[in-house]
Length: 268
Length: 115
Ligand code: SF4
Ligand code: SF4
Image (cartoon, rainbow over all chains, first blue to last red; front, side):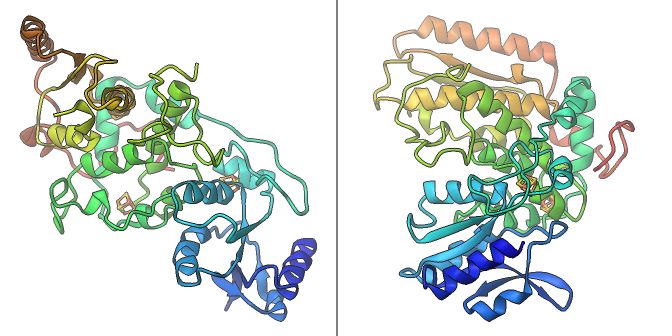
């Protein structure tokens, strides 16, 4: 990672960016840190075991420092999340500089990742895509009744900690559907299932970048990512749309959307 | 009300309250008063159907029909046909009484690991 470190150093020294958001080893734990001085970079880490939704943090930081250009270290999925955030006006064009790093094959396999590398990679070998839908097929081959039982017993474990939402690098609304009193009883425990999870699942259909952080964050081990992957797959099959792919392409499910009049099946 | 106003969240809410079926009816494609309200409805409904099917709720319980204001007969037909279909399917597994029987974390489908 020395080449990347050099590049970060250069960017800071030449004032190409005012700061770089990345992870730093802090008492042994990788934690998010806003690097502003070149000498701080010796503590920078790009740890594969500890992923973090840095792009989500960037929204808050960028809002506070609107005139600054901020650099950020991104993996493939994080770059896709950047694209989604720019598309939805959460970040400003030209005020973010992405520095790409590639994921190892091992991580790509673990993530079942479609694209384990960002559009520009500074160094290292890029891994092969590890597209794998066996997790969805496993569920789809069950009977309807079994599927229902499976999901209800999974959802039933939910402690409504909102962890899956809070960590999501594609979620940003200031007022969340999951806290809308007309839809979900505020404060009520246990959460109303399956509506709690389905609301988010539908919401993610043309937004999920499939990083898998939600499932990693869930303290109850609920396979929420499978839900999001499933709707994401629907949107891809029906409309040929992949979230986080192109910046100038609007999601087909957005109300004002892409302005086109295409009907389902356009992607086939 | 434009069918484009039917947020998918309303549909989920209806199912959560125990509705056996949800019928969304709107103006024919190309005849939307607001231009493209029904295009977005058409798109939303297919995704929603696939989602509820995935969690084990029959997609037959959700139906989209285009019915113009002048088509009273069609409306009657659609409603009676839909009611028949739903009656055949039986009550929704999400009726409050049935839902209460689920125990959290119950290992129902042994073959699938949690992670
Ligand atoms: S999903 Fe996993 S493998 Fe793919 S880019 Fe993100 S961290 Fe890397
Ligand atoms: S992280 Fe898991 S337990 Fe927490 S709200 Fe999400 S699904 Fe429920």
